[in-house]
Each structure stands twice: as C-alpha cells, then as structure tokens.
Length: 173
Image 1 (cartoon, rainbow, N blue to C red):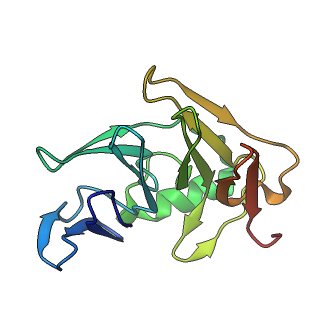
Image 2 (cartoon, rainbow, N blue to C red; image 1 turned 135 degrees about the horizontal axis):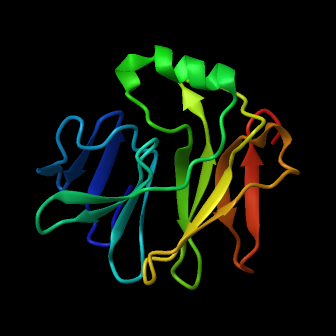
C-alpha cells in the first residue's frame, strides 16, 4: 500500500512494515500486534485504516506507532465450524468473521467484506458472511448479510464512480 506521503506499507501475516519511498524502514508494528492484516486504506483526513482479519478494523496512530481496534459484530457459525475453530488453538480465535478488502465511500464511511478464510482454504459458511459499514465520525457499525450471496463468501468489495458497490464472491465471480 502507498500512502499520500509516498511511504510503502507491507502487510504480512503478523506484522506491518512501513518504508520510506527511498527504502528506509520507518516503522515495524512488531510481531503479533496485528494478526492477518488483509488490506489498508487512507481516508480524506489522512487516517490509516487496516482490515485485520479476525481482529476487525484497526486505526493506525503514526505518532505512537500504535493500533486501536474496532470490533466487528459476529455472524453465526455452524457447529462444524465452531468445532474446527476450537481445534485450531494456534489461531486463538474468539469469533468467526474475517474482515477483508476495506474501501471508503464518498461520505468517508469505511466498508469491509466479511467471510471466513483459513490456511489458504476457504471454508464455506452458509450461516453468515457479508459486509460491514463503519462510520469513523459516530463509531457506528452496520452489518449486511445478504441472503442472495451464494455460499455467503465475499472476497472483495469495491465502489465505482457512481457510488454503486460491486461484490466479488469466491468461487462464483
């Protein structure tokens, strides 16, 4: 990700690195401060936001190189998925939604796709999956769980010039 200052941000499974345009390491958000960062965006006011997999949405504060997490509502999981989560102790997951692909609309609200991804294999969850809208001004979160989404697994969410959202659905298109 490139921010407005020309810095390059590299997202890896459990850390985020910030480099200057010249290649100097400027910040390292250290191991395990963030788990599974999946996307990053910068809003009009210059704020940096990161979709953080199972941690939800995070705002980055460059003055202190710290993160503040916004928890997203959970969607219901089937018993087999709950059992699988309990068996995967290394992930230490407390909920099943996985926030990905943040985008910001013209009004400054942040949208995130939500699904479930594990070990590069997609688990199809028929009970949930959808997208969130977060308003940084009011801190309100709205969830959308469309029944029309096959297998309810969104893999991307984009907004076009006219304000219409386009959804990419895993294994469908």
